[in-house]
Length: 517
Image (tube, rainbow, N blue to C red; front, side, top):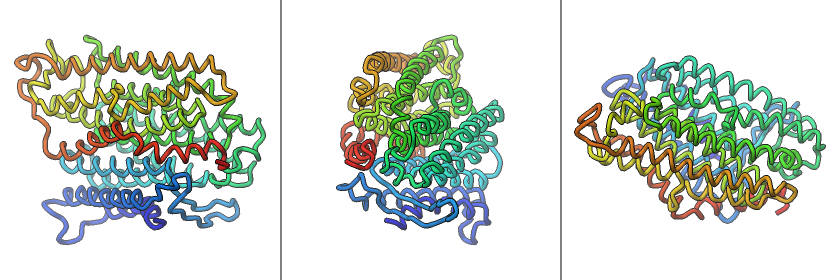
């Protein structure tokens, strides 16, 4: 178990180095490009197998305890340690990350985005995987920051070199926003580590902020929370996201929505809730307010993009939907209750599965039509995917209804639990304010259903004899292989929520109690 977790973090880096080397004789296949793409599928597949083995070997009777731990001194002068571990909070994120990277590598093997060298593409993908897995596995504040920053450069190049129109501007906006947020976050992490005389996240969580004064906690929450809010992204720090998603290649959008956004909300749960509880309680009402504004704002932006005649880009629409969905995650965290935080963690996983599937589908739709513009796709009567490509249309409709929170699918439980948490927030938080947030959030679910049903009507329905294309290729075999696991897990998590909640709840209970529960 200890080896498996260390392997998960280190293996992608070794795979990235190997991707840049010449392919060994006998493994070149039809071309060097095919060999390196096959290498990407193999490495991410091995990492996924290791993540599944880690999940199977995990002691499910003690999900609140950190398992598969490694604790080695790295910089003794600063007491920085290579400290790794996994509990019920981080395990689902590790497995989902490994799965999404494997599916993206598999999809890219058959549909590589236009751009420079495939070697560079695979190497960047593997470096990105290493950074994201490390973020969910490390238990040292400075290591967390290094892993958190490690993902920025590979994602920048994936957008800037393999993206579509306006990719340079979108990539620069992404890197500038996230770097500026990270600088502020580093100051907050250093403030905690220097004041408490340790950077160990387990020790800090067990102490539950007793070594930190109220002023220190307030400053730390403001600094660290700003950096995490940019990555989440929280309204009004979200403006980099639509541009990045619109310009990114398909797999870049999938990973950005499915994995990178979760790093921000994970930081709120793993660091701020247990380490600075007094500071979080002071800022929780404001975090809840920003969350519900994001829910409504994201939904209204999507409604405007979906309206006929507005030339709305489908990728941009889904990006704005992520602002709304992550608003529910932040609302659950702001409640500071086990119910709300469990809902936030569940919504994290649900959003990764469902929005990852949506970006896969819209990317494939753009490949078929040469555009993601909704007016162009829909034409006069609708794109009529039900008639032209019935399996494709059915998958798109499924992803849409899952995203709007249909009971029985994964999207329902996270949003419902987040609203329940806000309805009865932690002691000391202003209940009238949180009741208002609950009402506004519930209204946001109606807006979400409205714009997604408009998208389904315009893209899936219509007269198949009219429109921009009379023939559209239905789902290909490689697409079915990449998308089926996401569909299956969306259904499984919706029908069997205890699979996730049984892991997260004991860990959340202990986290909120400062290790005393």
